[in-house]
Image 1 (cartoon, rainbow, N blue to C red):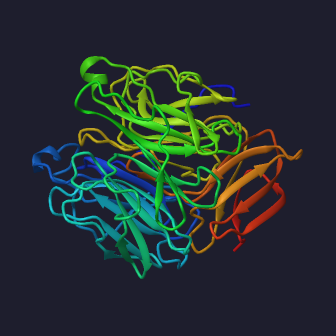
Image 2: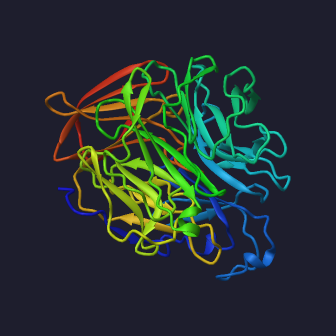
Length: 474
């Protein structure tokens, strides 16, 4: 069970995603929920500041705006009240605690179009805030309640061409966000990627960027804890660490750190560069294990990375936005009980900017959306057709929409089968549903322990498998 390679079916056309996504330089994509049903909705953002004729391919007559598509058996575009700009990152999150997901769209603002917060009021969307300063070169948002007031805060990464570095936005309620970067310890931090999770299990969310690690004190201040050797050596001037993800790849109950790469030297100079993995040793210590666990240097760019159990065998695999077989599928590095197996077909220069993951057809297998930069090529939805084990998906309906809740699953003998923290933004420029997905292999009943961001601990025994568990049941 789960011994073979991961297999995909390209369902882009059958899911109605070809025509709506023409005329785009895709640079942001996020799965989430607009209407509250079980199907993941999708937002796709684009850089729309290029000359018109660069977009006029595959039937487009010019640049298209960012698109919002409602999920189901196919995807349906809906009206979306935002101005075209350089959208560089996205995430869905319940920012006002009303039970539905709002939308964060961050912009790499070189054209005067700012980042926006879009309120979702029973499916009606309205721009409510422009929280970042003019000219801010945003890349990837990280979303979590950093200070325990049960309102999600937002950290937005700024790339190395910016002036200030990333900005920490404290949620004041009512879609008002205050810049609290000064005095936080995060001043002057530049990166392409960022995500948030409780790395040291002290109850306070921490911040991981693609170039540094910061441990939160629970009061919107941070202490740097960047591991030794975390920095990257450039080969050429256009080489950068890119997306960053956290997940427990070795099933020891501690979240490890994974960093992707956007190294142009791979295509320009024939370099090979791995995605890099840092094992959490506890006590705020990390050790790089990239080579040790079989993550050999890749002959392709892989800016987006994510942990996901793609064959439901109980071990978190790595999905990277490089491709195999000249764009036939994304790279999946299979986790074989703590070491990784590289797929066949590596070497294609084709890659996707982002590769967010969600179970789009609700069959218990995680699917991948390949976000395409070139307007001449379509973005692609890859349906996971892998024969794998049992599964369980858990979501939490608390005032934060589950963000920051830790979910642990135990087998019949009390052994830990998986540790996940629910988040909505991960990898590079990408967002994911607020749910924790577990592959269970041959296990057919489990105990689930949920610890919410507010500190409430819930134990659910004899939980069946192959279901989406929503707590509290509604």
